[in-house]
Image (tube, rainbow, N blue to C red):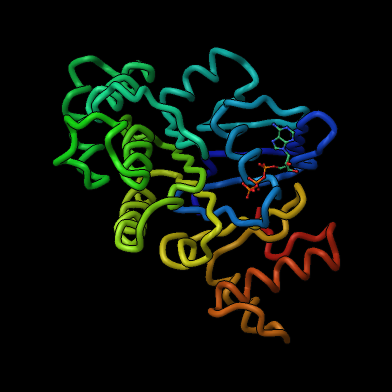
Length: 262
Ligand SMILES: Nc1ncnc2c1ncn2[C@@H]1O[C@H](COP(=O)(O)OP(=O)(O)OP(=O)(O)O)[C@@H](O)[C@H]1O
């Protein structure tokens, strides 16, 4: 892994009395990173901090070489990142082209570059033939793909996708994983998912969060080995067994992330 694109140290996020992330240290370099963990583990909280949507209660966040506690740095970083929120809002009267172009404008892309960038992003998510369709008339899975198109329109160096495969049918998921691998060749891609198959198929690195702490950070191959070495056989495939083994090891010794590489 070369230099880190996103790094957090001592990251603490609170939602009123709930501690969503508890002094987490982690860094992400180029490639596709899967973010896994049980419901309520803190995945969305981490992605929202990396997207500069939420300010942490404590800790330092460095994205694309900039400390984003300053608003000038934050504005610069926002132009260079892409973000698909878990619940993504859109203007229903907009066509796909209008909506993705609107996001390009928000990211302050050069006006002359926008039309071609919009067409390319929409084609990459397989919606080229729907580009002039109103978003509100599309299926849930297609709307999700519009969400991915708006996240990649500026060819981001850091791409954050919160459950991008939710609502996609099996064929779309397979195509989407191929797109993820392609995007990960040039950028740092962080994808939260509940589907261990997404991680096995598309991610080179895995970060497992549990109760606001890091339970595992390493390569997908390392997680798989953990599953092979495990005495119990919970899970239908090697990565699922690795996931269960890492969670159990973390629950037994919560202060020791398994496989952590700095
Ligand atoms: N707006 C909020 N107000 C209060 N508590 C919140 C809020 N958002 C998240 N939380 C709490 O923070 C913790 C972490 O939530 P987060 O959404 O980051 O988890 P997650 O891993 O993304 O979960 P899921 O897999 O269910 O999407 C949970 O205990 C959750 O209940």
